[in-house]
Length: 99
Image (cartoon, rainbow, N blue to C red; front, side, top):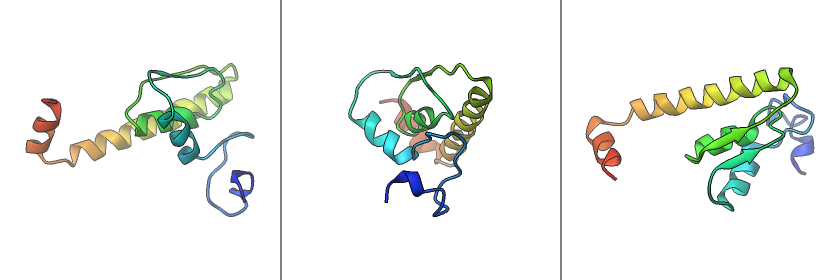
């Protein structure tokens, strides 16, 4: 019951033939250090996972269609994280930035 059948179960909106769940890529990223490089970015799942974990990310994609999808997904995640951060009380933001 892996992610291959996830679309049939309505769990993900698959935008690429080999798209993985973000949680799987988060797990992979947590096993590494440094900047995340994805030379076959596809629909950008690794980039989304990297952002969620606060990691730097470099993505490369030759297919313009998938590149555009990845940019859209990663941008939406970045905007969501920014909105989430804006909801944090001002005193907490100040304490976080001092660390």
